[in-house]
Amino acid sequence: MSSAALRRPALTSSFGPYLVAGAVFLFLGAFLIIPVLKVIQVAFQDPATGSLTLVNFQDFFASTLFRQSFFNSLYVASMSVVFASAVALPLAYLTTRFNFSGSVVIQTLAFVPLIMPPFIGAVAMQLLFGSNGSLNLLLRNHFGVTLPIMEGLNGVIFVQSLHYFPFILINLSASLRNIDRSMEEAAQMLGSSGLRLFRRIVFPLAMPGYIAGASLVFVKVFDDLGTPLLLNVNTMLAPQAYLRISSVGISDPMGYVISCILILFSIFAMWVSFLGMRGKDYSTTQKGGGGLAKRDLRPYEAALCYLVVLSILAIVLAPHLGLLLLSFGTIWSFSVLPDGYTLAHYETALTSAWGFIQNTLLYAGLAGLIDIILGTAIAYVVMRTGVIGRKWLDYIAMAALAVPGVVLGIGYLRVFYSVEMPGSGQPLATWWGIIVIALAVRRLPYALRSCTAALQQISPSLEEASENLGASKFATVRRIVIPLMAGGLVAGFVTSFATAAVELSATIMLVASERDAPLAYGLYLFMQSAAGRGPGAALGIIAVIIVGLATYFSHRLIDNARRSRTDVANNGGGH
Image (cartoon, rainbow, N blue to C red; front, side, top):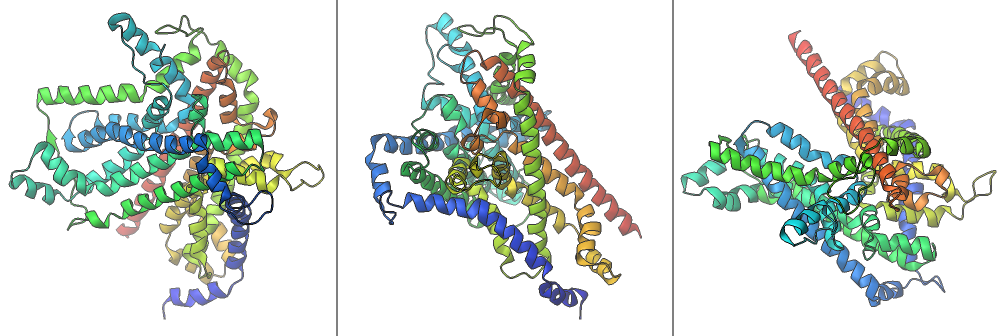
């Protein structure tokens, strides 16, 4: 009988894994399942009698404002997918199809928008592309025309498309690299080439990656709160949910109805993404067929290719350039560029906003720590034990991806506002720790995937050897498993930290006082007034630097861990 077979009964009979699984389930139940179920319950509850009813949904669709908000959100999310595709498709195809210098740099620069939350650059985009922005001032002065790029819903679509298109780029590029090259060669032998080859053969084979990326763009745009608020576009679902709860109160049923609709569309988009990632309907006869056959470019083709790519990158990186100019500019109004430049905005940001930065480092740090603890526990229970129902821990934790931040914030207000903190008498929903928990729940899926990947690369035989030498299960995990998972744990922590540091949707609902506000909330406050936009832009640049450094170190840690595992495998293979 194998050692694995001997080990399984001991694990399943032990109470330790069940205690760990129970503790994790209690946490997820209290801070994810119950708040979301409470939101759904209130949406279907009669405010007067408390009985189940559909009247709230009838009232929602009977209201002109809410119907308009619903269709506006669908329109913005759908058009953002269209424009994000228009940006991502050329970049993905050109960098995977042709040999030209700088393709790696181009792909790297194309991922930069994900570092900065879209709401941070929204004001900068107004200054560059608004009705009195740099571009329209030049067009008006030289040609007598203006472009309504940032007007109303157009502005939301433009900002969101430029921010979220890397989701399509990442997934589509991966699919293009995995296409069976023989399929393309067979089509070329039959006379297909150029656009026809791409339309009939290449793109359909890459469809799973495209659908996965497009679905992510749709759900991210549909749920986003900060960008519409900063662009003063309130006739969308997420802003309406926030405004109803913050103005009318947590007893208003419309905020909960909107939350249900947000959850429904998030689940639908994630389901479509899952189907796209499976890609069963587009599979080829070979696995790892080498990708598209790359070819060298003729001089005029290279010039045209660079012109297209550089034009796209100029638009994509415009929010970062605009934010940088705004952070240094003295006055920037009705002019192509700021009137002058100063460092005073950074001084203001580092003095008056230092509390926001400290809170962010504390909140995001604690959230990342909670995430790697929970992620490690869930990964170990699922992969190394026989706990009954252990897969549900993974499903529930990953379900946080389908819960918009504004929905989670509303659920926390509803559940925890009536619960008093021990010793203070204040509602638990006003405690800063609730913000930390909300950030941890929102980012848990990212840390969980890192922890799962790290644990998958550790052989169970190492744990068996430790236990055979007399070590307890807890000692084995502490002294063998956790150290070997260190690279993945740090990467998971950094990912959770970086993304939690700029989270607005959940935190804007839960900040009870400015003293407890994190960086994203501070950015939102600064950007509300013209006088605060300079310091707000400086604060935004600081946020980008924090997230960028965290992302950089995360990639370095992952690469070092991968290199170490390769060295160990090579050395082991030599013996």
